Image 1 (cartoon, rainbow, N blue to C red):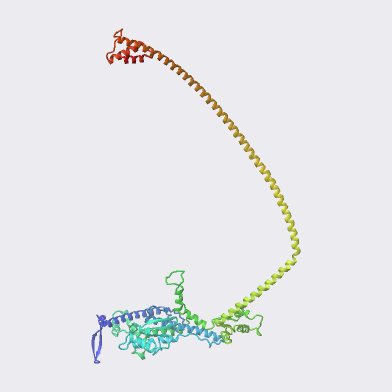
Image 2: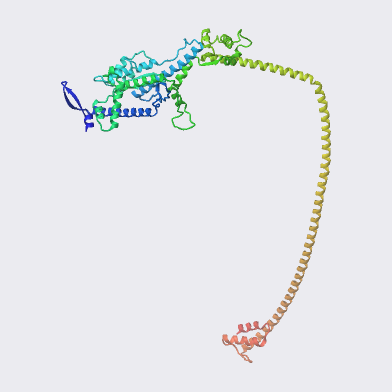
Length: 586
């Protein structure tokens, strides 16, 4: 109930004495609740950090003033999104400030080295981004200053904030850019060291307010929970740190709180010996063995690596000890020795010869300022170092060509001398080669003749053997042919004799058959005649009507009986014929 009353209602003085309770609007109640949640989260985070620091702090009997410590600062990288708001401006402001710290450390270390070597570095101008920091956070005429002024002004909103910001900012500034198109959309651009970033002023007034109603703080203090009471105490301590005694009535804002914390951080870094570690993510896919050039280049810009390289190149980017410089560039002053044996004198001699050769690329003043000799080292700016390297390469190439030319002359002369001294040896070698060649030819001819004889004998033996085999095969074939022919003739003779015997038998059978046939025909003719005669006699008898032991056939059965009787009486071969005649007659 107390939490609800604190969020939904507020008290106000009427007439300076009486307090009246009024209802909060829905928007104010939501804003108050969000502020309370953010404050509790901030107090919990602060409590957590303080607890961790107490646990890892020095031992109680050791004074922190005389003890060493190591701190690790992990910050966001430079951010530039499609839409950038107050959060991105604060992150980029932090990066700008730390980049300035880095530039100062680099410049300081380089300056100390130049002073110890007695080098004149007054003409060197190192890059400085103080104007970018002034645009963001400078008393009276900066983005944070205007934002803090407008956050608690009556009737303030984002549109009025943007309008006043455009009026107060210097239109000639190269860091802050807001043309008519930007102003129409209530946007502006800041040219950071890593590149330009466009910011939108939408909801900046609301985001910058970080006040917690006093009633809510009192509510936390009245809680029966010790942890909640402790959070209220942390909130009071934060309020005291961010609102000094002289300005107790000034209201706390997110921008002012962030600026104060950043100044404290820079102060602490100034009392330490910092080391900077730049972490590069090779790709956005989180895979191994894949290097994305665009992603890496954006990170190099965002992390200030390119800016660091530019700072380093703005001074003497290269330096060598006297011995190293002489060893590397001694070819630029060949055959010349300084009056003094001091290494620095030798370096000055080499530089003098080099400057005379570099007059086409640099003026004498540029050459003198770009190459300076210190007490222990020689310092070179990038352009002069590149020019010296080109001269050194050319000198080395010329020296190599001279060495090669002398070597070729020496080799050619030795070859000529060798050839002159080798004429007699050449003649002897020619005679020896001639004798060897003749002997080799004779051996080859002998080998060839012997080979021909062997081949001839071998071919004769092979052909004779082949001929004998062919002759024997021919004889065997002729013998086989004769034997086959003999067998065929014997078989033909046997066949002919068999055919003759068969023909004889057939002829004899035919003759016998013809004789038997003729005999039968004769008997048949005789029987026919006798039958005819008998028939005629019977006919005559029948005609006459007499019966001489025979009976005439009256019917068909009678004819058959007569026929049988006739056959049984006479017999022989002609009886059937006679029977037929009898039947016909009957």
